[in-house]
Length: 173
Image (cartoon, rainbow, N blue to C red; front, side):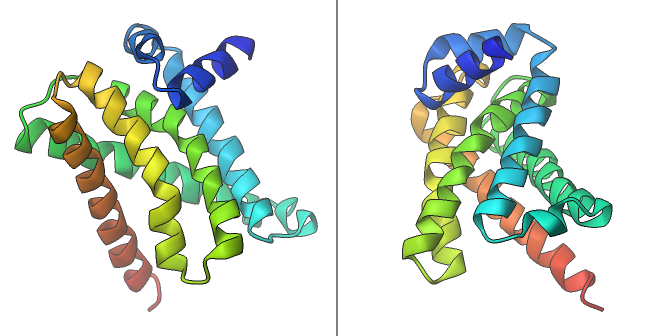
């Protein structure tokens, strides 16, 4: 686990070595999944979900699936924007790794939520660092200039919000 946390710190600091490691290490996808799951649990606790509720299997599965859904769909949306709009390179797996290692930055949502009452504004403010980390990773992986990489990361975020809105409205019925 020490290697994973070392690479996580490098990712948050925007060190190129972390993205190179992710590109060449297939095991990093599983590490990214663990980071997403752990972060999702911490976010749920930080936003007020009682621990008693979290140990219930259905609640735990719901929390974990929400994070994994975001991770998989955001990586796919970013991949699509990067690849098809900006002619970026790379495979979907590396986008999963970058997104997974950037996911812990969403813990800022817990702190932003303390000061901002509008949930959409809190989501956008806390997602800013996440988008910066993903964009930085795309400059290496997709071989895009920082402007196109940032547009890909933001475009993926916007598509993710659209997909979540659509699925949220479908499941209301």
